[in-house]
Image 1 (cartoon, rainbow, N blue to C red):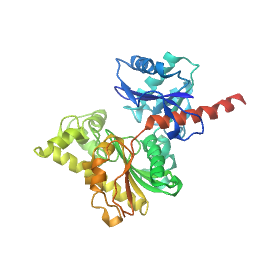
Image 2: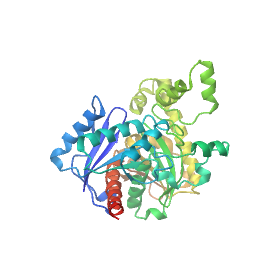
Image 3: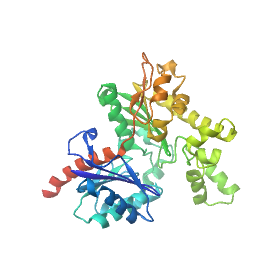
Image 4: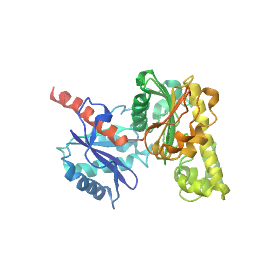
Length: 382
């Protein structure tokens, strides 16, 4: 089955056409076009049209898999898309407006372009964390409020973590069911996850993608009272403060510019704001790494993934250096030369390994879509 994997962002559409068969491991899928590509358009219809034109020569599109960030409590596994599902995803936009809205727009644009004959499935970032135990998923707020409004910790970057878990198992030569992993997805959005036996047992993002690590434009963890303090002090609305925390904070808010870590690394020698921003970023990540080693009662490996995690050895060093006390020692040469590819970056003799896994969410989306649609066909025929 030729599956077009689509990841619709706020201003771009990432896509990849993958030949995959139901039941195959995700890594067995064969890319029919060169890597993951990105297109921009005036709207999602034009961006989708550009993606379809780009992949046309590679082969027919037999199915489409859409990355959807927030599945709420209803969607805990890949799901065939119909109008009822689209309506449910639209209702979830309030929990992830920067993410679910583009996904729904991309789904509608794709349906208009390809017609109803091409099946589509939604693959959810929150699904990997559906296994969170209650102690990790529950906020300490009045239980009746949480139940009434479906408030809990969901977690995100699940597609990335599922891929990283599978690749880590391969690199370590052990089944995922036997591993304890602390994974750090570091990119524009950043999060951490504690993974035991292939399942998420804790993660840094919560009800929305705002909680947890410092990110490019998102604040991560803050005192909840900060929202009221800022609203009153600045005579601002709740929406204003949420906008500041999501789009004007993080590395961008601390250092100015656009929050790109490459720029901050280049500036930090002579720019105190850039230096502080990176210090705060790395300190928060180190804190979660240490916390999740405690949650797991030790780990077999620490895994770095995402654009920053894959390409910034200096930040990996600042985050995971000086963890010899728990058996983790980085190898400086391996760390400095492992860029954008899978590899071991810990020293020989390290009892906790450190790995880099190149993210490949599109390949996993394609595999999950093929498996989901294969399950759905016999169900509809009964």
